[in-house]
Amino acid sequence: MSQVQLAELTAFVAVAEHLSFTKAAVHVGIALPTMSQTVRSLEERLGVRLFNRTTRSVALTEAGERLLAEVLPIIEGLDHALESVNLFRDKPIGTLRLAVSRPVATRRLAPLLQPFLAKYPAIRVEVVVDDRQSDIVSSRFDAGIQVGRRVERDMTALRLVDDFRMFPVAAPNYLARREKPSLPRDLHGHNCIRYRLPWDGSIQPWIFNSGRQQTEITVEGSLTVNDLDLLMSAVLDGIGVAYVAEAMAAPYLAHGQLVALLQDWSSTFPGVFLYYPSRRQMPVPLRVFIDFVKEWRKDARARYAVSS
Image (tube, rainbow, N blue to C red; front, side, top):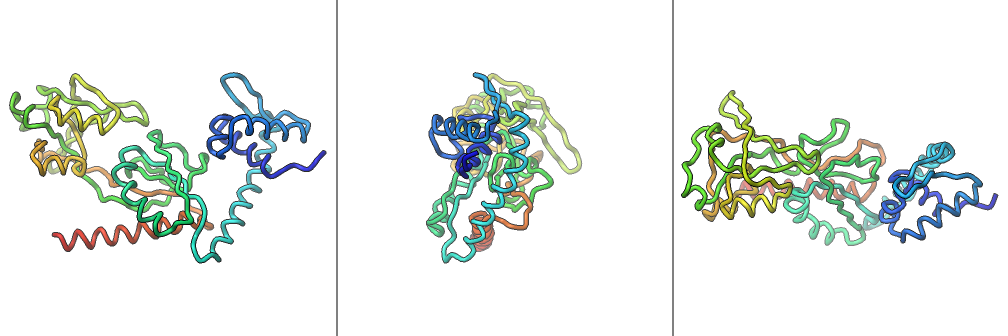
């Protein structure tokens, strides 16, 4: 048997993890025909079929499963060995892969990217906007950023954003035609813009708290969306009432474009967290990003203290 190339094993692992030649090619950063040929060459060297392929699916054969179990620890060991050399460099180098939900990507992560990349020019950041909350370990992400209630308990979590309030808002031109609700149940008489959660397809619940009393209202309306930018556009246009995070509504409230409703009944939700698997040897790009986020949080709190 001729010598197996590391590139062939890396390609095999990528396809095995994604169970898709197309996704594996995108992940590795090579053309699809090259990925297919590389895996085919490995199968020819070994003299066994590693994947069962159809026009719709890719699955490991028994031989492929055995090879993956043996090879994956070796590939990960090589990654860790190369990463350890990074500790001796003056400037960290490498790739940081982040899985981030859409609202967090645009409103929380985006402001951090320019200063981080300016501070660490040798680091490459790959951001995958992922509303499905994929398993960051099996998908080979270094970390994820999500609202706290969606972070798995076996992850190490670092707070990016404090707990936040959710409450209904509406545009003045909408309220000019309707009476403001004074209790959550009054929302049954309003056209409510519903938000379908991208990760599981359910409708976001409208939850209200007043002291120890909590209530959840099933709202109805003429519009349902699964994108927060579209939700904000619709409520600003006066289509109806929307249930949004305070930080998202704040600029529009300050300029009188929106009116906050049921302030005595707002509900608090967990903040936004950077989360990553607990492991002894952390990749250097992730380690410096965590340190950067901690420093950014400290500076943000100091600026807030001065302004208040």
